[in-house]
Image 1 (cartoon, helix red, strand yellow):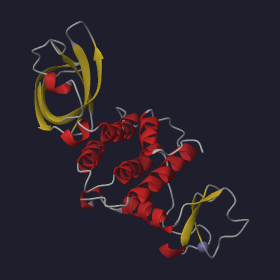
Image 2 (cartoon, rainbow, N blue to C red; image 1 turned 120 degrees about the vertical axis):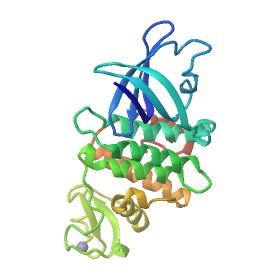
Image 3 (cartoon, protein in one colour; image 1 turned 30 degrees about the vertical axis):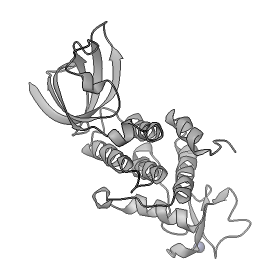
Image 4 (tube, rainbow, N blue to C red; image 1 turned 120 degrees about the horizontal axis):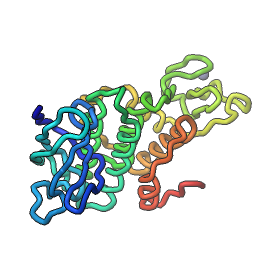
Amino acid sequence: MIYQQKGVMIRQTNYSESSRIITILNEDGVMVPLMARGFNKPKSPFIVLRQGFKEALFTYNRFKGIGTLNEVDVISHFKGINEDFELFSYGSYIMEFVTRILNDEDVTPKNFELLMKGFKLLEKKEENEKNATTSMVAIKLMPQYGIEINVDECALCGSRAYDTFSHYSFIYHSVICDHCANEETLERSVNIGNRIIYLAAYMKNVKLDMINSIKVNPENGRQLLNFTEMIYDEYAGVYFKARKMVKGMTGVDENP
Ligand SMILES: [Zn+2]
């Protein structure tokens, strides 16, 4: 069977001196392993895949198991990300959030759409804040990591008045409104502030198609990413390699 599908390369490993086996995440959300013959040769037709993130049209033969890559036509070069070391680190972080949760059972085109949305937003660094963009991707993936955050109503009184939310409780797994906040209810909670809770709730609830830009000031973006990471640490306990790269650049101490 010959396929022609949009996708992005998510992994690669040397197979022989000249060939590599690559894995693409295709537009249906399926991971497809492909033999790329001659990948390492100087005049390889797959040279475009050697560096950086690319969205491409992949033409390949596959019956089952490992397919054979025939052609690659780049759709998006993501130059903004690939030519900026800092943005590239954020791109790697987004890639890691998406790829860590991929498996062969729960296949959904949403994972590919989310990855491409994240890259497209990150690409325009004048318009979109990188920490907030990364947070958006991570927050959208939370259900797949088995994480459910309640940033919409107070766990104690049910209030949905956003302007009264400032604390997130790891006992109630929820925001606690200012009226219900006292020494007892705030045990194991963090004061993350109203603005950050609002942003987290927005990103959790808004449809992906509706997000065209993420205009957030850098300080709020950093705080939102810190909160998102705190949630992942508490509920998923997954270690992301790219996190250190990103933290190293923002000057935020990972373990204060
Ligand atoms: Zn309350």
